Image (cartoon, rainbow, N blue to C red; front, side, top):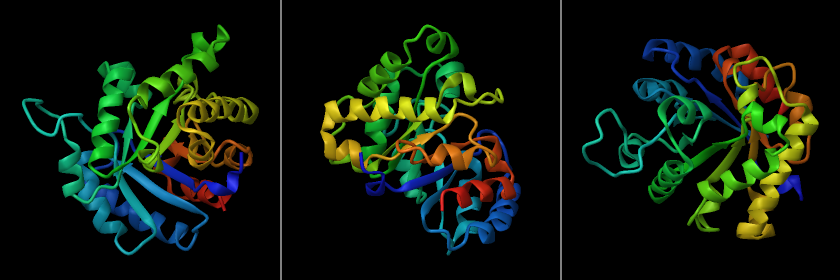
Length: 255
């Protein structure tokens, strides 16, 4: 697989952090630190209430602002939810779907992840699709089967053309917020399994062109080694995306 065919994407997932004022201050601080670093795309996925402030602060820079989730219905009696149409009306281009915290705490399944993915793609958005195994699955030696199954279920009925707007974030659940990190070799191997699954679904050309991020506690200390691997095309960054200098170091590693 030819890594040069893929765009490196470094995306920050703010999770439930930052008020609008705090988001404005953060973007103001990080903007000069990542300016002109065009070897990778830079995205911050923000809580709904901070999106407008983050967009205003990022205007004129190389930073894109995304959302952390989206509902699969266009409208209706879904109190507290936000549709893809609402997000695109606000100028949102990227959205995270299927994050392990959404699956763990809010009951999202591969079926609903698939529905959300198709809704976001139909609205013209770029999807950052999260998948990965839990600790018991890793210890049982079934990681490959788990991520392959998730890839197939989450991308069911997605077309090869739509895959141009799909980024996959491999996030070993046992490495999120725990301080644990998959070794670069483990990350590369599992991203390679996902890529091989994409090849069986969509063909070699799509598999080679799809950006696959690593999303399990990538930080300023391990980013360079992870990003050097042939199947790791970026990172979905949690805690380190809340500190300008740490996020800058990851973007620098991607250069």
